[in-house]
Image 1 (cartoon, one colour):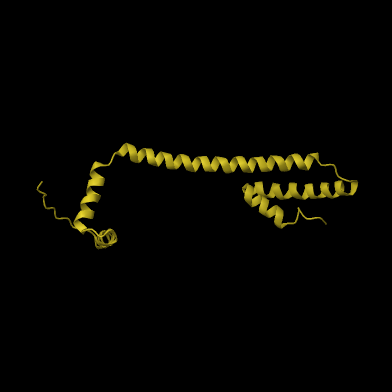
Image 2: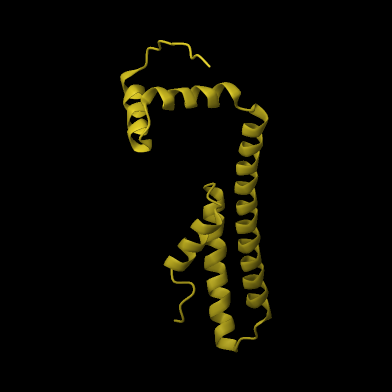
Length: 132
């Protein structure tokens, strides 16, 4: 089959990329360009769209799994904080810490900072988790 000649003006950067790919694949530049054009002209838009949806779905699944893990951790923490019996002196300290936590949380929410990770970092850095 006889091939037809095509003259194309390329941006210098694109020509450099084309040449780099051709060298890496040890193929003539014209063959690499022909393969790229063939891929572009004959590509199935449905396949591209499906691949994009699959990628987006994978991202959403990972985000949902992280949210589920974080929620489970928060619920377990809440359950433990209410269920564990404490001695009287610890209860007094607990009430004091609870009030400090409530105030800190109120400030964060008033400022629009309601991110779980930011709140937990602030909470830990202020030493609420340490024994006095």
